[in-house]
Image (cartoon, rainbow, N blue to C red; front, side, top):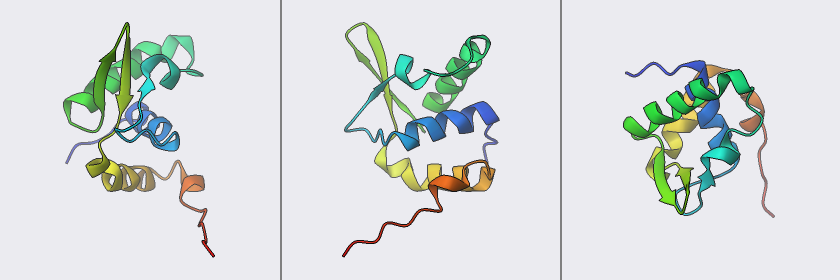
Length: 98
């Protein structure tokens, strides 16, 4: 089993929170918005690792790189985020439809 670093887990949280399943993409620049400048290289390395192991998909759109996660990985990403214990707020809300 692959051991995810804090940076990789945070990257998965950022893309999961924005709901970027592979029908919708987010640019790498937008995904990294708010990251401290001295950590950008570390986050780009985490993105590369997540692409290599299949948790993220990379698409070249014009002059930028867009990212998304495959729908088949949604449950895996949820389990990783739950196991990390750092993001309880996204799993504590239940939506009730009438």
